[in-house]
Image 1 (cartoon, rainbow, N blue to C red):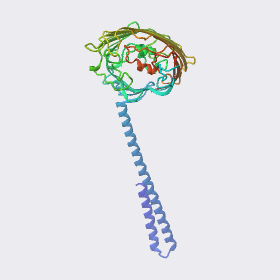
Image 2: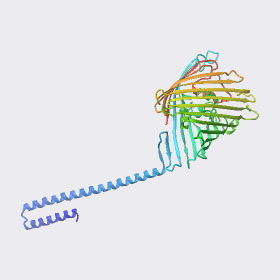
Image 3: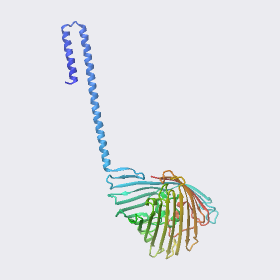
Length: 474
């Protein structure tokens, strides 16, 4: 018998007993008072028992609800673990399937830059100079704002890259790089789409990992930039992976640049390409160090010695037919870099031979030979924090025009708050001779010159550009 029943039995017995006494002596007021007191006590005990029972019932219901919620949360967590993982691996954000067959890395780059350009006089014989009589031009710009998605689908051998870049003038997003790839073996990878031509080391090094604020003028005069085509890379498994080979078959220099003047309207469809065929190949050799050291030009404190040499050659046949130049272009480059314990050095020499068989409104007839050289270096005076640097450039153009040569000096420093992920840079660029270096083989050269902050000027020497930039990578 439970406590409730025992309580009722006890109370009933007491009432019955008292009632018998009352019936025996109805005149006893004392007994009646006792009966009333006992009745009140029974009622009180009954109420307390009812309240305890209700509290226990509520507690059981709450416990059951908590168990149900926890069980549902465990189920959801289990489903997440079995379906996908996400987070940050120290380099970039990622989303991946548990079995590793699907992966998407998400990364981005943002650069904010302030520029100051000074020239001694107007760019023409009249009293007005560039943009009027103002010889000092200043302003802010966002040269790069990019988001990249890359990884693999179905299995780790099917690769993809999609990098979206905002146009510096209009802010319109465009597909700067877009490739579909397949890892044939551990050493051989083939890709198709839009990517950098395997030519200049400086161009192939990401803008996020340059030594100076911007690539050199030499780079922009000789680069092939982005091209549309097929690309292949081979990491030779011989001699401790000493050699790396890359090649492309594509639509020609700048065929992957959406607008060669810096906009986003040019389509560059297959029927618009002014090249019959273009081929290029580059070979890099690791003399000492690790291949990861080639990703940038800086040398971090405690970094082991890294020595790399490379060379590339590129040839393209321009569109043949009744119009156009019906010519060809041959370019070559050799370079070398050294890194060790905070000190870095890089040197490159580049040449180009342009042969135009016919005269048209955009190209000079005959042959044009051009050469360029870059020498740069830096040192971490405060380990992994403060890195002063210096760069010298030389360009010579030999053609039927008045194009001559240029000597350009850049001096600056990087302050690393979180290595390349967050850094502040400042430098001065000095163009000693007038910049009149229009090259027919470099359709993107004017846009590239604008990126440096310099202005094409055939009249004035000693042009100076000051630059300050903040970079964020995520």
